[in-house]
Length: 376
Image (cartoon, rainbow, N blue to C red):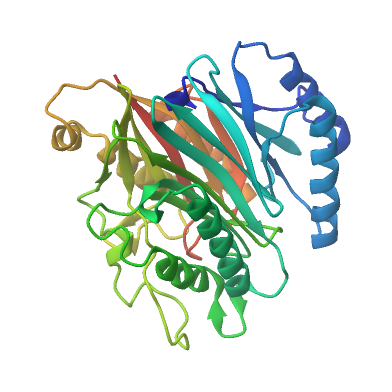
């Protein structure tokens, strides 16, 4: 990761044909042959599974294969989102051990890594709950584990600056309650009043096919940290949505999604903007219903608003040159992929990007994009 003097890369199989096992082995060989002088601390595997049992078996097999390659611990996620051009993609995160000390922390079946340097600490990890008892139960279990981890390491809840939330069947229902709404209710309860004065984390809330709930997070404790929410004037902040947007008429409690459109992050003179999962929404209304080209264009316009010259002036008095870093593009329908890819490349060129099939938090949204912007 950039702020850890490292990087993130996507590894795809050399050939798009072949079995899943062949593609996995090819990606692992590529991973092993990378010699950057940096150390891997986190791996995400984007791959589909046709059942919960199949997901658990695949997750165990991938962990076994990784353990044969690396003796040290690893923060690890199997995310049931199929790539669009192959069967599996590995996302690898690096840090520079010259600058950062790293200590792996285990809590239950989950692992996080604590980075430290000159009194500053960064905590990165993931929590998964796949109890098959409904989204509300998985959300309560996951946030309870996250709470215990933060408390154990003396990180306040408000230290979270970026979060990824992967929900199985995100727009589905448990009885009369929509799963994403249930998650939002539990998240609101967990956050409480922690972020009232400083703004919420940047976040992505996205669907996956199996696996219950995965929460990935980045939390920071440092006197050197400068961070603030970044707004898009053309969008209503998600945490200020009206009742008209929230789903689940029978829900007794309906709270808003607690995240910012983006978040500025500066630490040890490294500056960036975390771009939350962004979609084709103006105000709080979906734009371009049924039109993947229009939705991709509006989504990119929304992203570029977040690091416009005007917004950058609000962040800092200094002049910044902005560089869009990496992106994940979540595509709802496979048939829309060519059109979405064409629009993305016409606007961003040859940027590092991965295209993944994933359901999105509104039924009428066809694409969602997240990423980061480096400020130099």
